[in-house]
Image 1 (cartoon, rainbow, N blue to C red):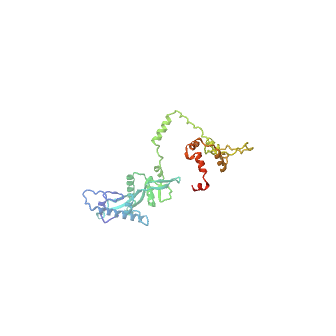
Image 2 (tube, rainbow, N blue to C red; image 1 turned 30 degrees about the vertical axis):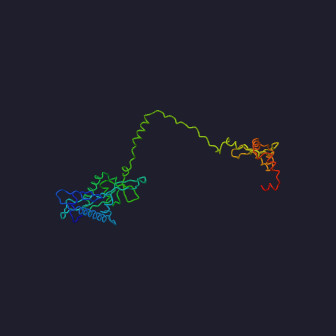
Image 3 (spheres, rainbow, N blue to C red; image 1 turned 90 degrees about the vertical axis):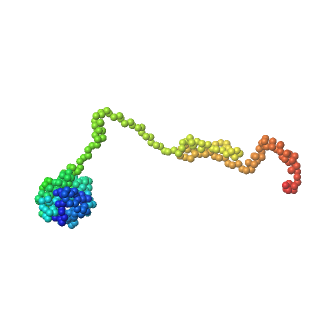
Amino acid sequence: MEFSFDVDALLPERITVLDQHLRPPARRPGTTTPARVDLQQQIMTIVDELGKASAKAQHLPAPITSASRMQSNRHVMYVLKDTSARPAGKGAIIGFLKVGYKKLFVLDDREAHNEVEPLCILDFYIHESLQRHGHGRELFHYMLQKERVEPHQLAIDRPSQKLLKFLNKHYNLETTVPQVNNFVIFEGFFAHQHRPPAPSLRASRHSRSAAIDSTPAAPARKLPPKRAEGDIKPYSSSDREFLKVAVEPPWPLNRAPRRATPPAHPPPRSSSLGNSPERGPLRPFVPEQELLRSLRLCPPHPTARLLLATDPGGSPAQRRRTSSLPRSDESRY
């Protein structure tokens, strides 16, 4: 594939590795260095044209490789150039191989789902006029050495029949593991992707010490059985004894007649803590007239007698003089 600019000067090595930055490689000493922006634009032109040619060869509706896709993904592109033929002194591009790591859910031979992140073959193209000349194997082998992977560890995105024959011819990849997506993996893929985890250092030390120490462990101490909880009591019976004592009113309100004999059938008392306590019967109130009569019959207190004797206005003569006045005079005062 030829271009209008000097490809041989732009890509000094036979196989050039391009990442998402699409920066031009280091220039060889003694060559003129054009503007950096122009070099990057030329590289983007090469990537776009290679993507279009690959889509046309695989009969795809749109290119899957472009400069914009390279800049938005962490993919790596291996570009192979022709060093022998120099048409018009500008060089030519033979083909390319694009790879990248992707997180996939794949099925193993037992149809179990596995989450893996292998290196995937995303696009592979060799110009039609230079196929079957060993260029594809040279490019693929260089990629395996650079990425340090084995052919059976790869996942291929929608491979064509030419690519499947290429892998079977050069790397003996024939038996595939059926998948529900567009990726193809070969037998031996899970032998590398899923290894049993090594035991931790702490676990190995614990097992080693348990094997050396043969002293029997002390038996576990048994705790006494827990008692079943009974009914919850609101408060103890000792706190309820004071409620059974009948409180009598003060004198003279407690002068009610008492019963001579107890009743023949007293009401039953319950000793259950859930029942309400029984109170003694209270005596009825004394009538007002009986209360006043009892107060008149009470002898005067000695202190009251002393006050009456010392009070001049309270002498018996003064009381007789006041009581001897006529009714009309008493009403005036």
